[in-house]
Image (cartoon, rainbow, N blue to C red):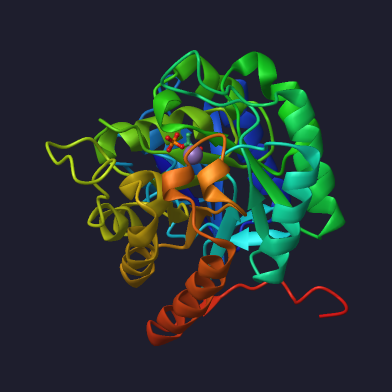
Length: 346
Ligand code: PEP
Ligand code: MN
């Protein structure tokens, strides 16, 4: 149920209403917009009928939340939600980029990557420290040292940081080092991890599982939001189809579908979707043209020597090209590419 409050209700009436519902055992989720305040009541109505709710002081309207994903839906919040990653906004009018290597490989390397990221005007640095590799014999990431190097490098160049958390036990470490916690495609339905991420107050980048429907993906976002962490960014990163020419199949249609159904920001990961360097830029262009609120890409100073995902990593010059092209596309569709100011001395 969505309990829309009377905009003229005095704060004391609103506080009393909240207290009454909370005392009755209702789980309440607040939705605020322009001149709009509503309480989402998800789960059992704790003995209230809809008529009882309508009669409570301060209530203007009681509406059903029809979608099975309640808090992620535009019924709950007409939106759009702007998620702050450090100080960088994702969602809303601007288009926001994130870039970096697949894995943090060494202190020196990630510092150089951070420098190049900032020089390209990209405000958020990515880099995996705990890697979900298909083979247990492949490079698994530098672990905590990787997170530390990533944070130091980002701080040295004025960037925010995103990295993948693989296990609930790692959350305290991530709270210390990162601004945005990525849930990888393979963990999209790890409900115990999602529940724990619902208890923290840092944003989550929720990638789409390679075999997940949009509905299942929404329900995963709902797991995080039901815990009170409303800052979820959805990332389309390709799904498994019968096609073998590309690593996965990028579902470009998911972008406008999601944008209609949810107030959450939606970004795209063309690197993992297509898996082939020379096709990453065209795909990124398509994603922004389709309405994505941002793009996350992998690049590397020497892709041939990368410890993971080298074949899909852009060269640093290509990152500059990507930024220029996405700037143009954003403008054409009435948006603006959010760019980190050029570093001092450049
Ligand atoms: C990654 O971002 O490096 C990654 C492993 O992505 P995904 O979970 O989408 O495969
Ligand atoms: Mn990767």
